[in-house]
Image 1 (cartoon, rainbow, N blue to C red):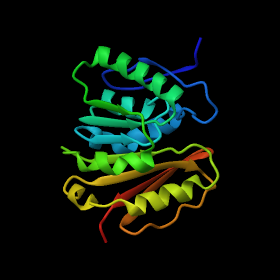
Image 2: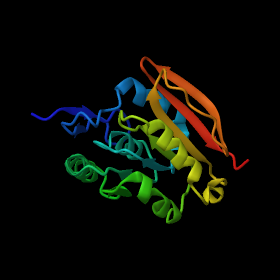
Image 3: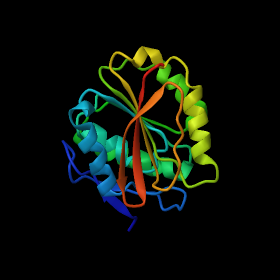
Image 4: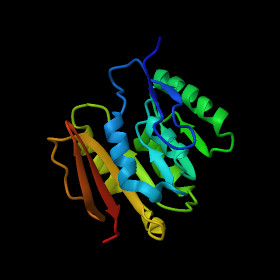
Length: 197
């Protein structure tokens, strides 16, 4: 029996999701997931939610269940992507009209092109929960700093949510202002709003 987790709220509450059986991917704990959606609250409605290191896709699928307008989930690992697709199909059985794109690609090379094609109705959320690899946080921050054209999201807002080890030092990045950090044991969610300045 493959390991699993469940969607916690919304239209697909209770839906069981499979998890990749790999050490490079790890599920976001329920307490962290609840913390995120407690912070987002009504902002998730009509949002565009982008999950950068998808794994099972649990955060993106949870967003759809809770009212997001559109979700993009990136996962480059072939085995993990197959699990992600199974989970996506399970959600689409309950929500046939869900606007969901699962993308087998490396976030660092693929995100910019997909952002250009977005026509958001509400807040754009970029959720990054990178795998535990040497130097990955620094690589993520350099990548975020390199993103172009985010000004067009200012009308509705562009929010970066970074899930990271609580002891990790998060830098200040030009054009992003930290607005909240919520510690959940060994894991912290840091929220950064794009401000252009």
